[in-house]
Length: 408
Image 1 (cartoon, rainbow, N blue to C red):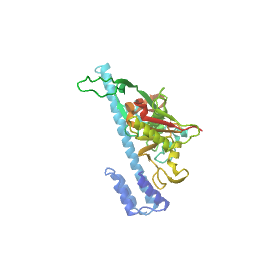
Image 2: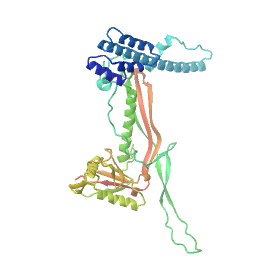
Image 3: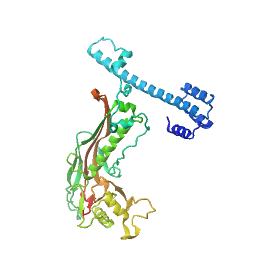
Image 4: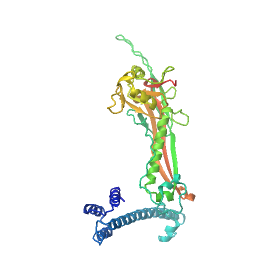
């Protein structure tokens, strides 16, 4: 039942009444034209002996709407089954024609349906004994929505300016100019010295992030919400979270090499006792990055350091907040740069960078595949998500500063 109507029915039931003429008109106008029988049943109940204001009429209207929705679900399942059967019959006919020319076609009657039922025909044949594995989705009465487990999206890829290189093949190389000779003053008519550029290569080899779930067809068929969409969404968020974590602190062994790995950027380790990174430290790094010919455009901060930066005040513990008053929105910028907070950064860490000097290779976007054959003997459906990403590199370590506070 539609959410708007469900609320209307609940209010009427709580007040022990039927429906007003406006509510009845809304219900009737929502019924598709092809459902003439449903309209006639509702009108008959409204004009019956109980009248529109009685709870009995309200319950009769609810029963009619539920029957109409069940017919719509059955029709959709029949259409899906017919399409799948037609596809399988076509493949079987082609295979039979290839192996035994002139062989008779498969039977088109009900016998076919009983031999190879499609996924849409599965029903609840067994009770789900483990609620955590899906039983919560199929009790006798359940809400038609599911509260998803919240997972962070990619804070790393959210930053504009990062170079995302799409490519085909096994790997690719990105030429990198490491040095060049310095030009000088040349006298009139003198030979101009030839410059010597020195190149290196940033090599990107793809690695695969993957996630796999499976669910019984009973749970998928009986869940009150679209569990397939839920599973696909969770898998994509899982992969985004893992890529985000590796982009910041991956070791490069069976994962991306993260921005905080040694050699990716310029390490700025604060002295003993300096447990909080301050705006003075960030300004120093900003100036050093500028001096290297890059332009800082983003600040990434771990949650513990973001708290201290946002609470920094003009006179230590007193005065106004440097990042704005408490009546302003939460500080999302500093020195004109966006501040992105991520729990995927190592603790006590702030990064300041020119994102145009960061490169990441992308072999293929997140892909979700579904198979009803993976667990054929167990009557389950498998869901798989894959994401092929090809390395992370910074073409100039001076364009990225990794500021690390002391542990104590």
